[in-house]
Image 1: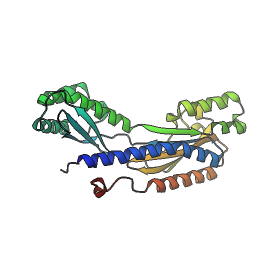
Image 2: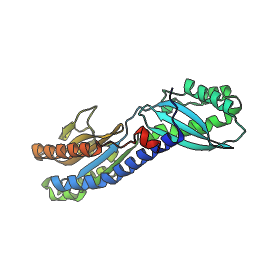
Image 3: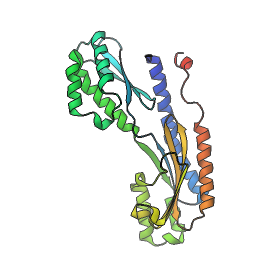
Image 4: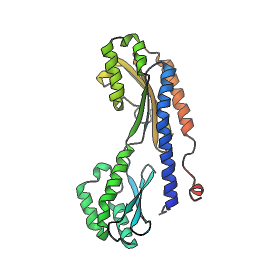
Length: 268
């Protein structure tokens, strides 16, 4: 029943935030490089896993009138929030509230944090009940952020160089889809390293006369990256797939370096 120190939670959170910023900056660059290498419109995406839940709550006093809420997720990510106390809550009350939170609000999705659950937890929290809505809001926001994605699209104008897209309306529809509906692009299922969808195999109508090739790679820290292209059904699948595989493998190696601090480093 190890309890993280403030320095440890701060160090882990900072490391994860820095990694997310690094990944976000990489998305645009990767999309542009893939588009140049394939001469096709390209996408680059990073995603956190869906289905995350809170694994543990910790409440740490941070001086008079404030506490630090520490939330550990099932993805092993740790986030925290400084909360100003609306009432005078002592160490005993915080321990009671922490026990109630860990007994009733762990292992749940954001959608399962209902009004009925909030009422039940507040009824059991005693004098610390006023903290419960703040804690639930933060936990819900954190869980919903876990399913978020960051995607970049590059090289849409390369479509106009393909004979199939010299029809202005056809090219416009596909380009608009890639910009406005890019979150609906197909992605490899499960742990599949690559997915190739040709013409009618695409579910979305905007892609039914095009092909999509998507390669998956591991970013680490329970994050996944994708690189892919959209183009005509006559594209050279072997060449494009080989180049995407190379990008994916290279990115996996790059992100495979240790990102989180060791326990000794976090205590320095």
